[in-house]
Amino acid sequence: MIDLCLLGSGGMLPLPYRALTSLMIRYNGHTFLIDCGEGTQTSIRSLGWSFHPIDVICITHFHADHISGLPGLLLTIGNAERTEPLTVVGPKGLEKIVNSLRIIAPGLPYEINFIEIEDETKQLDLFGIKMNAFKLNHSVTCYGYSFELERAGKFDVEKAKQLELPVQYWKMLQRGDNVVYGNKTYTSDMVMGEARKGIKLTYCTDTRPTGLIAECAQNSDLFICEGMYGEAEKIGKAKENKHMMMCEAANLAKKANVKELWLTHFSPSMVKPKIYLDEVRNIFPETYMGKDRLVKELKFDE
Image (cartoon, rainbow, N blue to C red):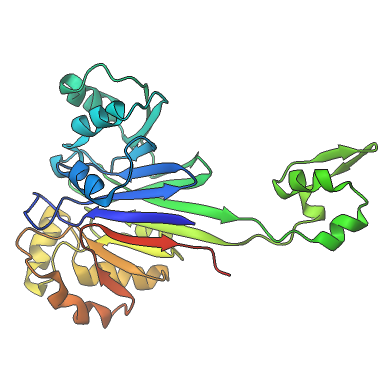
């Protein structure tokens, strides 16, 4: 199971009723954070989730509304008595940018490990979750992120019994380890069925629509995507500033065959995003308007 919270749903500048876009993901005692605009800490505090287990921070790009809250957050993580290394992932130049911001956040009690992305896509395995970063089409280098939690096949007790392997070794085979017993090697495929459907989450903001987005979001259980503008007349502005319309996000969701779409990163001029919901649902019915501190659990299919 993965639980997540859309900490904020705004773009460009925080508003009294809408924080800047950020996403928090928790799995198996580990926490991932995507982006950290000003005010991110306030949303985390309001949610009641802890700062200490934040192990990975993913930065989409280096515009202020996505990274300006980072120095304060790094200090708060240190004040939460974290001493374990923290991993920060983002575009090329990440280490230089973060260290520049750290002028006002010196003396952290933990190390920061940087992973800089330069390619169109980059796959990482972090704390049991497979993460795929993919390049977007924005005015500066920008990346989206997909997270996949794989699920092994079912353990076949009858097959395990037929092997005449002592029960204490069964768990090792379930983990995918090989077992040597009685001069014979046993492998997990002897007792495990076909891999079952896992959980997939994709986050994408500050971009024009691209084929790579649809490809990387394919079959996601939840697709969180920028829908900066809802008004049809704003398409010229979206193209000029390389942002996305709500209808374009819905078409991507349809093309990617996702289960559910959350729209986020709303323009400050958009007071009531929900007025466009019916129109967008005509394209992709399972569309929902993101809002601050919207929480969801993603579970394995039974």
